[in-house]
Image 1: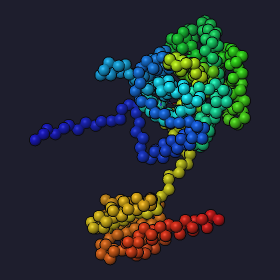
Image 2: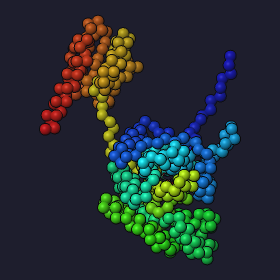
Image 3: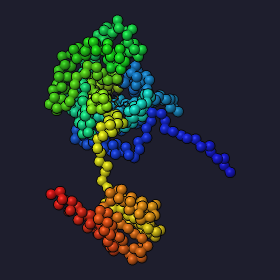
Image 4: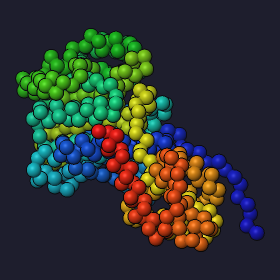
Length: 439
Ligand code: AMP
């Protein structure tokens, strides 16, 4: 006899999250909303692999960013390749754009994705190690109207999901003015090094812009007084930014200027924004996502100079905010028909009837493993069924079936062979009645 295996309780890995059936209603709603926006604004879906070469993120997101230096799930494969689970999706999309010659398509190439990302972050409410983002990328156009449209998409998707949203926007400048500005910042912080937190004193030389959005209180105080990027933009950079803001005004988007928005990743240029939910707990602002231009990224990855812009929004955070704000979501419509059966012969026949009706396009439901009629009628009630078809020994012997109107409780016997037509007749009557009521 084989030795009995010891019972071991295996649990969810830290920082991971199951998405249970109840929550799927939110996920479906968000997915549908994203797909509808994508269709209207002309974005096509792209899915890139979860695993990429580690160098992809080192070269783009930046070796000195927290995401790459501390949070990546990196490993060496059996074949000796250095790989990582993607911590974000923009660099993979741009890799794919270059690799598949999308440079030769009419520009801009507009792509969207929905997928899991992985960061070895400290888990807490709304922060996981596997989390989902949806994102939009428009590659190959530098017109400021595209910036405004991207901000608009990120804003209106979340507004449509019932959230109170504010956009905070900044310009981090093109690479030349950014380099100049970083020099100015370094100078500003030179004699203040001692007051910086440990992370920021390390960041000062490697990732200076991040000092502006450090959460440490002392660092935040120092950041209040820093020279601002918007005062050091080139003429063209200023013009671009002003045009973006004008379009945002035109679209009536709720936004504010925030010189501290620098975004965590290295590749951002010019327009950068973050998306906040602003009716949340204690009026606290909560970042749901962010985006920006990344005009140098295609070039960094070996393509020709190509302006581009994108944003990403965290789905778990959005759902958390929808739940906090008690956004009502449609639980989906009930079923038209439920099939109830009593006795083994009836059950066999019911299995086939279910398939028959389903194939014929009826919205039909069942609980074949339940035996009692009371249980089945209760289940039908819960599912907001309009009609229940009941089959027992007697009906099988007579070649009939019972149709029960679930609202009135009235039951009628009909010829089993005509069941489809009888159900259809009643459903049509129901539709006509509802239309009359609406008038
Ligand atoms: P980022 O790619 O860092 O700009 O993040 C964009 C959005 O993704 C954030 O505003 C969050 O909504 C979401 N996000 C980022 N990291 C996490 C995480 N560890 N867990 C859950 N959501 C996250």
